[in-house]
Figure 1 (cartoon, rainbow, N blue to C red):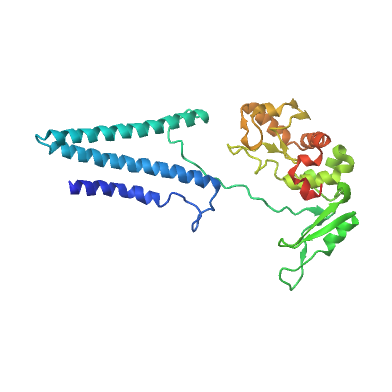
Figure 2: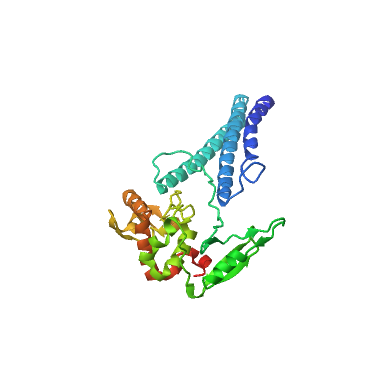
Length: 323
C-alpha cells in the first residue's frame, strides 16, 4: 500500500514543477510582466489544480480498491470502500463537467468552432510609446550635443527657427537628447516646406490651406509622415488595427468619402462596437476601408472633413502640437 502511494505521489511531482513556472515573466531573460500575465496566472493555477485533482482522484481510487479487496467479510469496510469510489467519481465528474461547460460557453462567445483548451493565453508585446523627432521649419527639434560635454546640448538653432516662425520655444531637458517644443499662438504654425512624404506641404495645402503647418504636425505625430500607415497602438482584441493612413483615421467612428475607386464607404458598419472593444463583422468592408484609408489623398481629404466637424481635438496628438 505504502509503495503504491509513494509511486503515485511521484507522478504528482511534475505538477509541482509546473507550478513553479506559472508566470513566465519578470525573471532573468524574460519579458516584462503585463496585465495579461495575471489572467495567465489564474488560468495556469486552474490547469495545475485540475492536474493535481486527477492525480489525487487516482490515488483515492487505488486506495478504495485496496480497501475493497482486503475487506474480506467486513461489511462495514466494504461499504466504506464503495462510498469512497462513489464520492471520488462523482466529484471528478462534477469538476470536469464544469470545465466542459465553461469551455463551451467560451468557445461560443469567441465564435470558435474548435473545442479544446480555451484558457491558453498568449501575451504579445504591447506597443511602446516612442518619442518622435518633430521638424521645426527645416531643423529637427532634437538639440545638438555640445562637443567635449556629457549630456549638455545646444538648442540655439532650434530655438531660433521656432522664434522666426512666430512660435514660442520651450526646451525639454528631461529627455536625452534635449528637445525644443515649439508652440504657436492660436495654432498658427507655418508650413514646413522641406517636409517629405505625406507631410509634404504641396500634398496637404489643397485641403488644409492656412492650416497646412498644423496638419503637418499632426501627420508627423500620427504616422511619421505616412511611414506607419497601419496603427500599432489602435488595435482591437484580435490584434488588428482600426486606424489607418497618414492621419490615422479611426474606421470604427468615421466613414470615408470621395475616395477614388471606392466612392462612399460606411466603414463604421464593418464593426460591432467602437475603438479597442470593436469587432469586425464585415470582413470585405473592413479590408476595403483599410486599403482606402491608406491612400494619402483619400486620407487627408477625409481628415479635413473630420477637422471641419471636430477641430484638431479629434486627434490625441493635438496637444503635442500645441493645438
